Amino acid sequence: GAVVSQHPSRVICKSGTSVKIECRSLDFQATTMFWYRQFPKQSLMLMATSNEGSKATYEQGVEKDKFLINHASLTLSTLTVTSAHPEDSSFYICSARDTLARVGELFFGEGSRLTVL
Amino acid sequence: EDQVTQSPEALRLQEGESSSLNCSYTVSGLRGLFWYRQDPGKGPEFLFTLYSAGEEKEKERLKATLTKKESFLHITAPKPEDSATYLCAGPLNTGGFKTIFGAGTRLFVKA
Image (cartoon, rainbow over all chains, first blue to last red; front, side, top):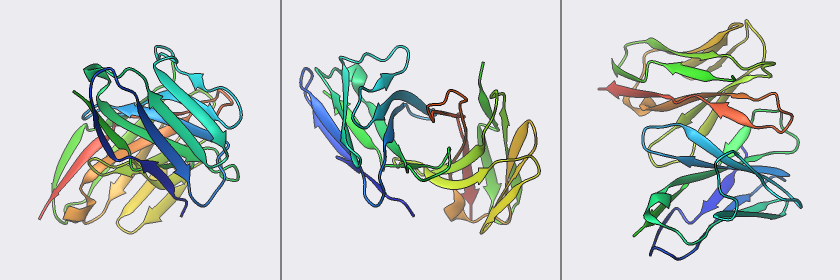
């Protein structure tokens, strides 16, 4: 099946630094990728929709200057958490939609656990 | 308001004890209902897509069914390795392929 690779799986950083998370579709082209945040024992909260070659669309309440998204190619989207603070600590997950797939068949990365000290 | 609600929040079963998980939805213009499995510290793994009422899909010990208002994930004779969080989701009718997820059912299967 389709594979989405997310890196790094775990990252620990100091408060005030920036962290970049990569999401790659390995065997398909993804014009659309999604970034989620997940708190313990809660469901996935959609943060933004990343579209190849255009600006990301952010959900209400998500700071676009805080969470920078770049989708420069059909197989790569990046999420940069800028000036990270402890409250940004969370599990971040990306998903990618195969351009040839039916609507709901999203394929997810393994997730990235961010801990801000 | 579009909403996907799952119940129960958690389910504890003995190995071999069959049961069902529920997903009810109020998504206008629903274009499908999806089930995912998520293991701790991992991203969700796609299981099933159901597109119309009456449709059923099976995979090993899992069977997903769909009615006009809800979906069930039936687990037959579960094993400990079936322990995970099961998420259902539906695409929003916004034209942007966004998907709304339920909060999930945490399944624990004891040997």
